Every structure is written in structure tokens, then in C-alpha cells.
Length: 485
Image 1 (cartoon, rainbow, N blue to C red):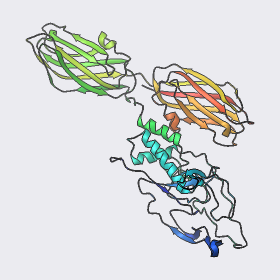
Image 2 (cartoon, rainbow, N blue to C red; image 1 turned 90 degrees about the vertical axis):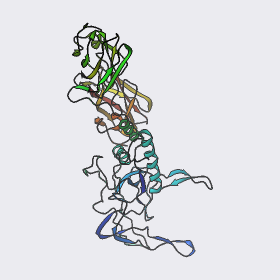
Image 3 (cartoon, rainbow, N blue to C red; image 1 turned 90 degrees about the horizontal axis):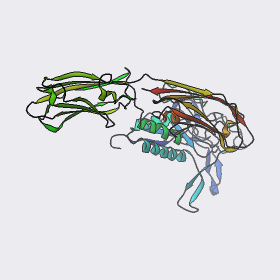
Image 4 (tube, helix red, strand yellow; image 1 turned 30 degrees about the vertical axis):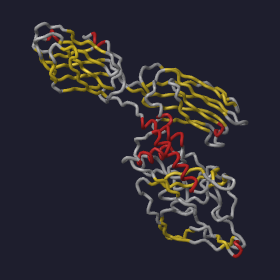
């Protein structure tokens, strides 16, 4: 990708064993079955090992993908442990063919026979699914490096997964003592997400950084590709040019010089300092042009036969600059100098532009409507809170207090005044009670995607219950919005 690097997705394998591990216990790494006489499946016993080596683990740019059942459990056969990066939905099946385990297969084209299979599975189907999501991330953020794509996939992954372990393989008349079934083995015996000192978040030996999430990954990629302008920490943005440019005599085209300012927000005050050496400043016209194209006439042939225009103008004392108050700061500012009379000549030796921006603002709005959420109704409820601000969003905290006896029925969206929305909760959590907590833009990619939007206007919360029986109520919601200068 023209030097940006390639992301390689690698199937972790389907043997219910670690992919990178060394220990003092015998771990099975085969299914234990073989075809006997007449192609009849015959139990031959599992093979076991104590050392498992994968030379691709920790290789930059390579991600190992584990298998996730449609029930949100780890697929029983999925390999695990050090090196697992993500998991993706696929089939399920008991590694040793002794137990019934729940899970749907993946529908996929085959190119032969019926042209389609309903049971494409294993990490071999989970991996191309993640590859497709990685492609979506790159389409949303084409400049992302391979390392950045991997980080976006990890940080956006869902951790709403079922950590329940499977029962051990039961005995059979052909294998009465299946004590060999010890996977997952310590230190990977539980699937809990733990702090591994990674900027990408917590990690699980079963699921890696979590289940790949296309919507959240793309939202995070879009936010990374179009970052909101960052305010200058000093509360001001300044720039200067020291280029020496001769001013052509008696020429209405004049000269122009430019400089770039990068601070976010709009200017509250503007100051322009110029150093123009000229033998008759009454010949000169000086114009400042903002990034939006607005022009401020700063000096218009005043001063008669005075020499040199070395002066500081401010929006407090110059009407032209005063008219530029409120203009966005970020972008290219241009200084235009014209000599409109013959004989006397001069040169521009430099200029400085200083702008001040308003302090950051924190907007807090909330309500406690106690509104009942209609059951099995795609219209749901919608509540609005109004904010008054001319600034743009820097970060958002959303607090929710929703009581409901089955939160897997619920979909919750926050809609900004711009019309763009952030999907906060989408029918996850199954039979868990209540949706109570705080979602922040530093942790939730969809909220992060609203950075840079106008902060002022009507913010709407939509709560929809999409299944019958269980009902709930929106007790309270609160928005805390930090704005940019």
C-alpha cells in the first residue's frame, strides 16, 4: 500500500489448543478420530504435546483470528492463548465429537453443487470476515498504516461476549477415561478480559481484544481520518512571515504573502503587525484576507509622505479587522500590499498575525422523564435536550438510566444537531437487566465520530424496544459536552 504496510489475517486454528505455549502438562492437539476400514470413523485417541510454537505470533502486521459461536460463546474448537488478536462469528462444534454445542454455521458460496453451503465454519470462515472489516476500515481511512488499521480493529472490538466455559468431554464405551481433556489450560483457562498494558484496551486469551465490529471500526476510522481541529493550548493562535518581497511601483496587482494557522474555533480578537519599508506610505493599500475569503482593509493610502509603515493594528481600533471577528481561524491567511502611485518604492519585510479564541466551554444538559418505552415498537421514544453554543464538539459523555428486564431487546441512538447519529447500544446483553452507565467519546468510537460537529442545537436520544414481552423505562439521561475553542 505504497509504504503504509499490509495487514495479514491468519486463522488461529481449530484444535482447541494454545497457539503459543510451553508447559509441563500434555495438551491434546488432534480430534482423536480417523477413518478406519470401510471409511468408518474410528476413535484412535488424541495426540498431545507440551510445547506449541507459532513463528507468526507477535510478528508486526499479522493478526490471529479466533472463532466465536453465534451464541457469543467461544467456539469449542477454537485455538486460544497468546497471540490471539480478534474473534469473529462462525460455526460451532465439539472438537472431539462427544457433545452437542449450540451455534449456526456461516452461509457462503461454494461454486459447485448447490452453489451455497449453510455451514462454512472454523477460523477459516472467521478470518475472511475480519479481512472484510479491515478493508472497510481502510476504505474509511486510506492513509492509515497497517499498525493503525490493527489498532482501530482492536479498539473498536466488542467485549459483550459469553465467558461461560464448556463442560469436559464425557466418557464413552470406546474411551471411558477422557482425563486428557484439559483445554483451555492455565494460564488461559478463563476468558476474562484483563489489563495487558496495551493502549488498545483489555485482552482475553479466548477472544483477543474482542469480537470484530464493522460499524464501530468504521466509525473510529472515520474519526481518525478526519480529526477535529485541536485548539491551541495557550488560547491563541499566531503566525508570522519574515519573507522580504519587493512591492512593484504603481501596480494595482501588488504582492501577496501567506501563512497558515491551525487552531480550531473562531477569532474573538485579531492583531496584525506589519513591517513595510517605503518612502511614501500614502501610496500604499494593505488588505488582510481570511481563510474564508473575507477581506479587511487595514491601511488605505493614509499617512501622506511619511516613510515606512511599521505598525500593529488590532480589531479593537481598526474597523477592517473588527469586521473579521468570529471568522474561523484555521486555514491560510493572506496579506496583500499594493503601491497605487508612481515614483516612490518599497518592500514588505515581514508580518505577524495574532488571534485570540474563546475559552473552552462545558455544556451540561439532562432530564428525568420517566418515559415508558413501548414494547415491540420500532418507533420507540425520542427525547430532546437543547444546548446553546456556537462552538464545536470536542468530547461527549452520555449518562443513561434505563430500567428494562431484557436489554437485548433495546437499541439506543444519540442524534446530534447536525443529524449525524451515534449507535450507543444495539441489542446486546441478552437477558441482562437495566442499561445504566456512562458512555464517553474516549471509549466509544461512535461518540468519538461526532467530534467537530456543532455543539449547539437539539440533541435527541432514541430508545427502541424491538422484541415483545419485556418492557422498560427511560428514567434519566444526561449529556456533558466539552467544546473546542
